[in-house]
Image (tube, rainbow, N blue to C red):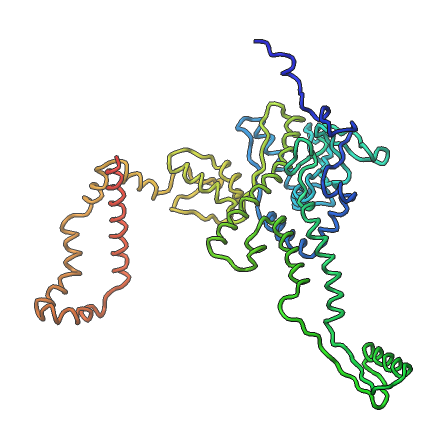
Length: 498
């Protein structure tokens, strides 16, 4: 069946949109706040300097930077593994002499704040490979988007529409772009009105404090004084406010009257509402922002889970920013390879995630190479002569490689569970006479005591029979019996399940 020509072309594109009345090479930012206010992105910078916003941003960025990232190979073929090694080596050096990788991570996070984030890559040929020599964050004001979402660079000679950019030159990450909005959703835009009302409220609050926050100075004069005397008294009162020194005519008096305001100040409550609205937009937290310190444990856990999901989505956005660079490295060097991917994990979980996976693989008999395990868990290969920490008594070889066999305890578990008769073989290693002798040595004195004094008296004096008991020996004996009982229980459970 031949597809009709109408089905192979776009029909509802932006060029046919009746709202796009002027066709330009670059599409103006459709941010509703910027358009209504006739402002530029400079207003976002002013919002970022608000003390409350600064505090929330510091909390967000510190949480993001506490997460470690791993670069995972895209495939197990030679080209993919070679590309993975090149990518890992890239992150072991600084991206630029003015920047560090944490700076670029924060810059990539800016896609949420401004709607999009752009990073320039300067390439160089090193050893026959095209490698990013410099990775430089660039301000959002330097870029525009076309109607088909292509990036354009604003220059001195072309400030209105910008110029085209080549592939592999820029890393572009956008936050929630729409078909008619390639610039993405800027969170700072949603902060504009709370920020504006807050600072307007501060101005009125300052007047309120100036008017009612200090005592009023009131001068009293006798009735019938002329205007000259009143003017002189007012002048002296002004000096009293400024210098706390005044010459008051005889027959007059001065009082300091404090203003009183009951209940909550409306200005303070209004500013608090604006701060909570901004925190809600930045952190997605409504518990601390709206409940004002009051909430149940269930609500706290719900909001913590929500915050974790928001942070995970942010880290995915940042990882995608750098994954674009890996894709460009693939296209310029190894076209047939699968590009590596960046993955973020929390600092306390870094290494543990892969550690659990490797341990489970070994438990089921899946072989894991020493090189693979060290790369995934970020564990360096020990140098010659270094003291090695070894678990289970298995010693590494002369090169410091981990032993290829499983631990003795794991082998013991397989011995117990591999056959129904193994547990019986283990039990048969202890003769009935040996078991009876151990029981007899511990229980016989108790039985003799009960026969001699009777059970009523023995119950109160049985503890006195072992003044020299070896408590460590008793502890070890009980531990061995508990361990054996647990093993027997597991084997019995598995047998019942089968």
